Amino acid sequence: MGIPWTSSKTTEAPHCPAAMEKVKTLKFFPPYGSVNKTPTGDTCPTCRGTGRIPRGQEDQLVAVIPCNDVRLKPRRTKLYVFISIAFCLLLCCLILFFVFPRSVTINPVSVLSVMVYFNPQRVDMEVTNLINVTNENFVPVQILDFTVQGLVYGTVAGTKKISNLTSIQSRSQKSVTIRRFIIVCFFVCFSNYCRSSSKIHLVFLTLQMTMNISYLSHTEQVTVDTYEYIDCGKNSTTPHPVR
Image 1 (tube, rainbow, N blue to C red):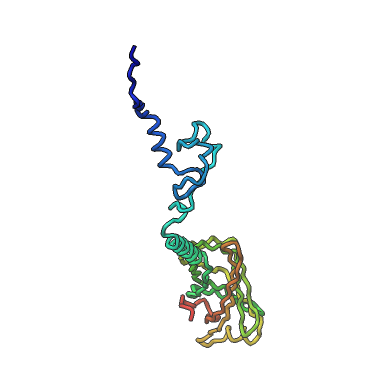
Image 2 (cartoon, rainbow, N blue to C red):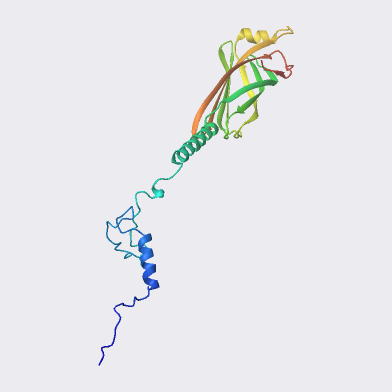
């Protein structure tokens, strides 16, 4: 009987597509701990060399990023830092510009009227003045009180205090009328001067104005001194500006 002839060549099994995909995946993802794709490390223990992590474990695993990853070297870092610093400086300058305290001024405008009352031993004068209060701030200013003191020849002859005044809006001006400001003069020579038959009875009156204001959570005092002339001989003083 003849021995059946058998070929010495073995038939190779066809390549499995799944195996080829796994080989490609392993070639694409370097071994665990390797940054230059050289097989010097172990297989990733989390993805088991497949390049994928098990579903449902995303919040339990830690990703390893190579040192040469571009995400670790952001571009234009200096530009972004410079833009941020410039923006912060601009914002601070704007805040300082609008919040920085500015002046609040008192400007005497005119004498509106003077009423003269002759008493046996003195002369009383009721003066009405008009003043302007200017607010240069970008915030409203609240007037706490306003005090006017009149001096005749260096002696205090009358004082008036006004409270509960309304506020002045930002970058605006408000007119305040001081009514019934009484000036009392006890000097004998002054009384004789006002009662004389002369046509000129001018008296120079010194006004010291003090205003307490409040804005931006702090109080401030504004003072101004001015001079005006009034006619103490009769009720003939016409409105005239204060110089």
